Length: 276
Image (cartoon, rainbow, N blue to C red; front, top):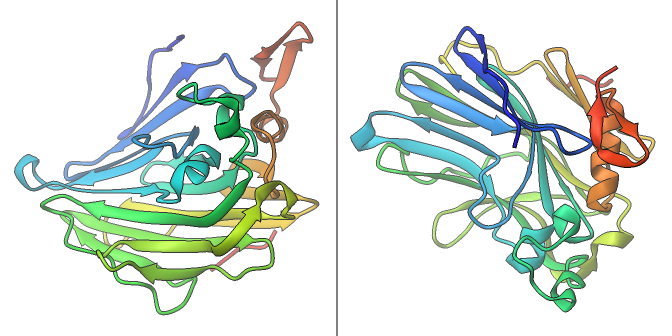
């Protein structure tokens, strides 16, 4: 692991965690007196992993928010999250890998388990909110792209779906019997992820004072890629499910990162439709 001295920008800290990948792993933390939003620029939604998380409130009455996937073993292995974050605003994209995410099984499960990854019968993204200060379950938006809003101490949490696609299916919001709010991308017959022309979801997330503007975020899908932009930061990802290596290569290319040499592909050098 290689780390750098954190770069302090007002209340935001960005730290380089690991550069042994086509896309160096970085963590960003935005800290305000009563709330905080943190993210990794890339990660996965395997059980107990939280590549984006928010906290607010007092120690004895804190609330939290994060995105997870209650989609069984295949969904856990496939779901990847890439995030652009600037202060208390983030643009998070969930795409899907066809080879157990990291190009290996995180827990060294046998090959027959990895072979299951491209086929899913359910694919959901859960808006997890909880803790003593969480404020209770989130209601389903009336329309697919309506913002989800929760007032928190000192500010407001806003989550808005900007893009969702699973083949030709229309995504939908659903509140489960136990009160969880899920974005349902697919539910029904087993679907082959590797055969889909597109499978992705993009959220704009803001944890900021109540009078703050929503993120200046854009998302565009064309030429088989998903193009994201947030306040000058840009990132592209494959629109269709792909191998973990292909996802990282597309991201690296969009960030201007290139391998230092063919012999060490994990070393790198650093040389529109706007939604309302």
